Length: 191
Image (cartoon, rainbow, N blue to C red):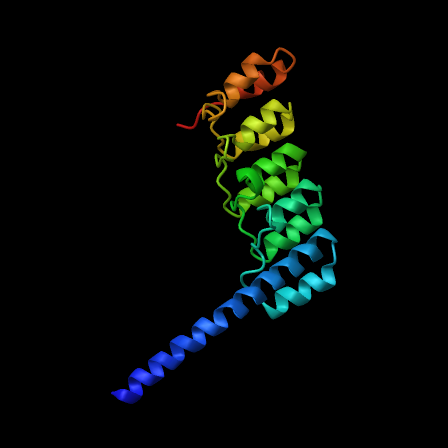
């Protein structure tokens, strides 16, 4: 019994001592991974993912962005495809609650939107302000993306938290975007 208590105490002490070092290693590896993604250094990224296949792919920068959102924002479809293929979470929010789908709509990345949806991204997922990708696409007058999202089942009547408006409401209020309103109005609701 005495030996068992000593073993448990020794193991607890070892875990407590090792945990900061392990956490530091993970943080260091995450920083290295995100830095390599930022620099588009595919060799380093592949090496890091080979050595630590889980945990790094969804790492976040100090300000909260994910590698996937970083590459979407820089309009890099190849890197987005690579990260998604390696298992990046298609719904993981980043800085300011931005989600990959709203980030892709914001930069007009149609192919990334297709990939995200095919990998199970929530088509009506929202950022911190309650904006859906459809609301963002309507606000930016991205007709092709509006069509794409509606075809994937996006709800044009889901409201945001900022103004309490839906994609349909924003389209109706925008006198310069009548084509967008027509696309939304012509879309038949799912039965």
